[in-house]
Length: 475
Ligand code: ARG
Image 1 (spheres, rainbow, N blue to C red):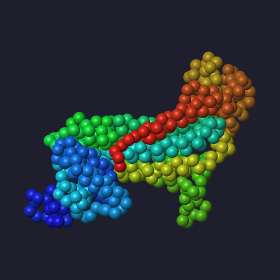
Image 2: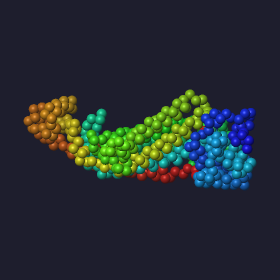
Image 3: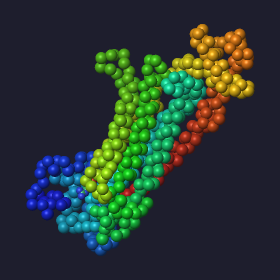
Image 4: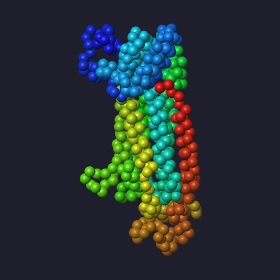
């Protein structure tokens, strides 16, 4: 094969491409891994060419058989891209032409790599958002597994990283599960908006040959073809939005990671990570480190970086296709790989961690976490909250001075601060009372937390179903 025949575009060039151009232009290896999606697009396109009369039924049969065989061979590692294959589309056309002769060269009619690359990435992402969803569901199940056991485990809750009010530990764990659940809803919204086929757009103006894009779209599991062929090849908001979602997941993961780092510290002693999910130090034999949480926190920076890289690439880019857009796969595939690595590690670590309930209970009243109970108690007896707040503040001052806790105050001490602080206030000054009194919807009362768990489990069930009903292209 001559040099120009190796390329999809060599004929009008007098000299071969410089090595530096080839090195810059060639796709990274992971882009070739989109081959099964490209082959699905090839199958649909072969049918489109048959409809257009460019392939006979017999030729279509040969073509789709060769596509199926290449798919099998590629997956079995029997055929690989060579250095001269600029991208996955070039690779596939080369092999089909080697195998089918002139017939292989017919498949290029009526399409362009500009619509192919969008098709490949959309199909890849539609598949992988489901893999990410499944991994997020497993993480939520791990959180719920722990929450189920800790609906009565008392712990201090925090604001400003200062002890705030008593909570049950399940409530804190479920707060994280709630954000992961919303991340999945974001994924579902994304999928609804992104399920449009770019095929038929060809280079940018639409195709004079592939003129039934609604049928190709259906064959590939999309809702419909894109409304506008220029938008089909030029837009990457579906990539940027995907990268926002993965960044949000990364940030949510980073926040729980940070808490796990705190909880495992000697200062907190709330949680012990299972040996299988912790690491040691090469110099300090006593160390047990929460590396999974730290690596996850670290990788979230990379997820955000991928989003900002994509947005920066898109900004001020004229429509329609420009080669800059090939950066999309770099960001998107890296974010998929990152999450699929991080999520199972986090789920395993959380599911197997041991919670030190005694330590949490001992710390629950620290830092006057029951102070709000006093103020609420006064307010419920008609004292304006502004006053109730001041009275309670004075109580805290008194306790700090005598180095005692709120529940150790004597009747005299209470009355000394304010006569309205009768001994009955003590009934409100227990952790149990504090927890159970917060029994409005969404509060930390154990009964409410159990209901929250039930609703979350139901949502997990629905989201798992959403994953399982997906019918993408035959891969
Ligand atoms: N390899 C390109 C990409 O990654 C697709 C081909 C783009 N089209 C072109 N005319 N060079 O997006």
